[in-house]
Image (tube, rainbow, N blue to C red):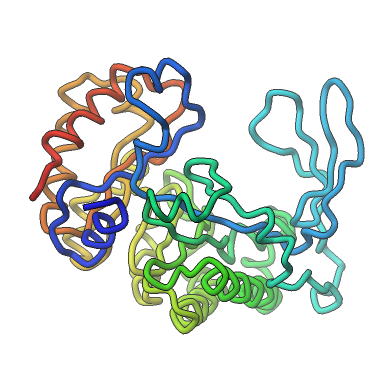
Length: 349
C-alpha cells in the first residue's frame, strides 16, 4: 500500500499493510535525516491549510527591531514576536469588547490569496501535486472556539461564553460561516473529496475543557453540527477533530455532531486510547503516543509497549499512530525505538 491507501484503509476500519503514522516535528536536525532518512518518510499524512485568517489582506509589519517584530496577522490581531520565540504575544484584537460583530466584514473565503499561501503544516511542502503522490492529503480549517478567541481575545470570549451566551453564539456562528466557506473552497480547489478536512480547535487543558460542558452544548455544539454537515455536503469524505488536552467531558457531543475521528489523544491529559475505543468503537483514533513522558524519558520498554498497544488496537483499522508532536526534548535513540516498533511490529498484512 502507499500512504493514501494505508490511511484510508485504517479510516475505513480495514486492515492496512502496516500501522499508518502521523509524526510531526518541531524541527528535524541533519543528524536525524542521516539516521532515518528525509522528514517526509516519517509520516503518511500531510495536512494542507490555506491562509484561513479572516483578514489575509491586512497582513503587514508595523515595526521591526533587533529584539522583536510587531505585525498585523491574518486574523486582524496586532501581535509581537520576540526573536527566537515560537509564539506571538497578542497586543490587540479586531473585535474587542464594545465592537458590534455585525459591523465587521471578513475577507471572502474564496479569496485567491489564501490558496497562493497554502502549504502543508505537516512537512512544510508548498507542492500539492507532489504531496498527493507521496502522502494521504487532507485539508484543514480552524474551529469555532480557538479562532473566535483569536478575533475576540481569549479572556473576553470565555467571559462571553459564561456571561452572554447569545453574543458568544453570534460570534461563533460568524466564524462557522467563514470556515464553511473556507472548507468548500479548499475541497474544490485542492480536490480533497477522497479524504476530507481536519478541524483544529484547541479547547482543553490537561484537567478538561476551558469551559463547562453546558457552555459547549449551548454555544459551540450547534456550530460543530453545522460545520460537519456542510463540510460533508461540500464533498469531504471525513471530518476529523484535533484538540490538545482532555476533551472527554465534551467527546460524546462531538461524536453526536458526526465527527469521524480525533487527534492527538494526549495520555498525560487522561485521553487513554483503550478507554476511548471501548466508549466509541467506530471513532477513528489518531495519535496516542505520549510526547511528554514516554518519548522524552523512556525507557525503551515503555516506548515499545505503548506503541504495541496502539498497533494491536489498529490491526483491523481505526488507528493512525503518532505523538502530538516531536520536540527537541525527544532523544534520537528514543524516537528510533518508537519508529522501529512501528515499522517492524506494525506490519499488519
